[in-house]
Length: 451
Image (cartoon, rainbow, N blue to C red):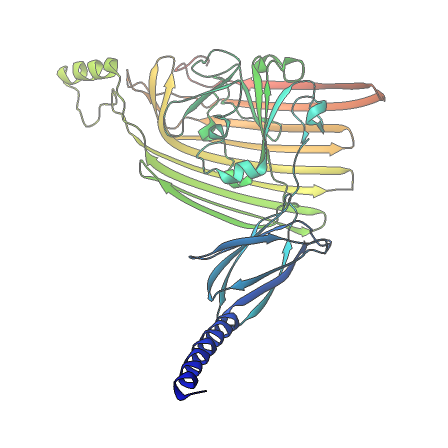
């Protein structure tokens, strides 16, 4: 072999060696990710769980095997987001930095959240029963749906429901009607929170902005489409909207929510729940929001205002047509649960709300200022027996009609006591019976209708 052939062979060998070494170096720089996915409560593996790995330049994934194990290889150095999900469990995300030639192990324990296919309802028959067994058309807005939405009032959760007509009269004012024509006070709809009527006493106005229940405290909402007079009386001709709040025993801890948006909306909510021991639980919630309502004007108000000014009225103090578009609301709610025995529970709760906004009436718009609503409620359940009593009180504060400037006075109250028992004499027969006493005490000093 001559010298040129040897030199040529050495050159080829050098090139091959370079590529082999470069490939080996690249392989050495790649990483691997291994781990398991299991149930956080039982520790059982979750076969078929999705494991998604995403970086700026790569998107790949795999599924766990029969033992809940997974493995991903060939991952170049970089920052990755590992997203693990499984039906019926909370999703977990982890951000991970991989260098060179690393083998990382990650074990995920997912918390079960359940899938509510046939939830338990209480509104249709005034007793716990499966949704599919209820003798009425019921729609349930579950806790997960409630938590995903940032709303000012509970009425905002009803806007996408079938057979429900929600008319927005402002940022936090709504009129809700089920299977019927919308009216000013929507009095044919019965609104409740934890079995308590929430309508304004005497005038039967469903003012959702004055319900002292924060969005963080709502467990679910049940909507009965159609008449419910057999169980709830003549005030529920077109349906029932029932808001059920969370039990302090099942929702211990502190939650805080902050939000903001258009119209200078600022919203803040805080909720805390705990227990002194296994028999006593408590919860507190506070919500505040403010904003700038959509400007709107009534020609009748403007004409009356111009006439009053022409007659010598002071524009700075004249209430006719003096619309204030700044809205504000403060809600506070507290509750204590006593588990007397495993089958007997006594609950005491109360709340307070205050708000400023423009409210529609049958005499034109009214400017609500320092309007407040308060309640106190006591409930007792023992097996199939239910007893409760509550008192609602309204104070319209400095509210006045915008067309006339006349002050609206409503210090009315509603006292209700209820007894109910249900009995199953046979597997095919359910009997529900009880006694309701509703005492409405109007106090409007002749400004609305009453005394």
